[in-house]
Image (cartoon, rainbow, N blue to C red; front, side, top):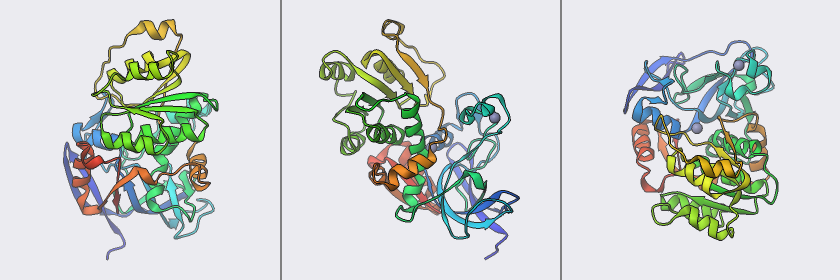
Length: 349
Ligand SMILES: [Zn+2]
Ligand SMILES: [Zn+2]
């Protein structure tokens, strides 16, 4: 085996992957070379796979390596890269913010306009054998957690951040609209934060089943029932304190306004496939709803790891499918078509 080379999966254009041999990177000062072990297939990866872009800004123009949810082990350390040992298992925070711009100086590094985010054009991601990252982006993966669970910390950090950003209080009531991986990790975070009553929705029965299993009191399928009517009925016309919109659909955004209580908060996490959405303004106006968007995560990876290590959150029910490296197209097709009850599919590198 040539140790100067590695395999990487490039997305050439919509729906076309190619495995290439490329030079293996070397860590510079403060960087770590990671041997990638498991990578999750995220909804955003699938957007690139199906459409070649996300919104009007992030467009694939050159072949790109996708993937930003990963766990691996330290293969080589650059000078001053931190307190890691070769062979140590790690979780990787995929965003490298500039550290200098106005929002970075304020500590809001998740909205840094100069951020380099793994697997987002033009930055290559993790569907490869080796990856270099700054040491400060790495977190030790506790012994009792698996490499697969390690993949889930990037999404969990988003759910936990969404809950923190909502200024959630113990005992409050919650609705999760959209029970894909992000909806479900938000549910887990809300429950760990002391949510008293959780409703969840989705159009896929297996996802509703999962939502119920991990803590939703009632789940609803909008194709079969009127979600807003049901939730208002079950809360005696009050609605919930916080609604987390995690589907990115016009329908769910409007449902959020309908089911959130007076003075409540609507957290928008979902990524729409369309460039324009129509919403009904009067309910949210009369109720003085606070509408807050959520962009990725901010400083919640360490806390996410602690919550799982201490048993307050269990990620295992969310990992439903596993594929070897050479079956990546199959994995992307499965996730694109929401087949076989998939929640999170992971690729073993
Ligand atoms: Zn993701
Ligand atoms: Zn910045």
